[in-house]
Image 1: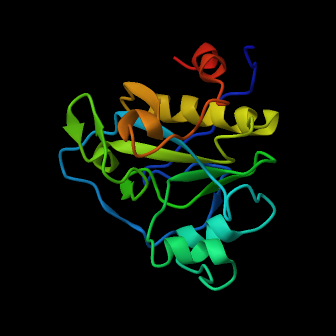
Image 2: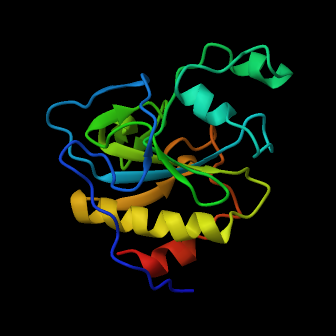
Length: 186
């Protein structure tokens, strides 16, 4: 199903998206000097897994997670990760890292025989799990976001975390509507 929407929001020179809520993460650093942004990586996340009504993901990405607040958090204790963007179930868009910087979202990864995908990618986390469909509101936010990124950078592909970390990661999972995304973006 094609979505007709207003023009996608613009990115400023620093890589911050107009209209996104900004919550800067310390979990980022400079990209290699010669690294063009060519890849978008779609993920899913919820903390604890399957729980969507709290701010644990935000707290994780900003290094404020109370490791003792839930037993699951002990399994990820000390993890320092981030993504450029996080799309909540209600479609709210949060940006943690400007696109010009390298977010720590991909981990050990490769795409078309290139290692270290964080160097040349933008990470988008969808609040969700492999086991549930994503919401209409999430697609309504994701599609113009991807369009904005394609206008701003020489994006060559939009892939899942599972595509760049096969055998290690499974997200965004079987319920992600790839066809819908491809029908609405170049």
